[in-house]
Image (cartoon, helix red, strand yellow):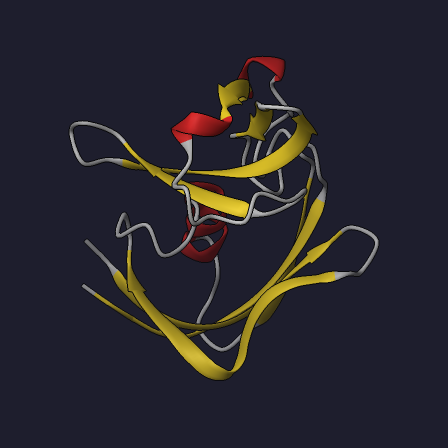
Length: 136
């Protein structure tokens, strides 16, 4: 797989910064999950040392918001020492050891609604990237 060293800035379409690696380059290998596949495909199309900007619709980027990704869970499903509050990010482990991250969307008594959509689901984004190095 190809390896890259890049500088990047990811923003909402309205300009609000989401993430960046402008001061220190990000080094990654395609498929290593450091970048979402939609952003990897942008990087693959870049020329070395050229700053490029990609405007991605929500469907091209992190996908739409899926209603089925909202799950109502019991307060008993959470660790007792966890402070349960709106917008808190919570990681859940499955019996097979996989991890899923969700964001607390609603609290109604002992019913906690967790949003398992990608945090940028439903958002149009701007991805600026400059490829510094590419190797195989």
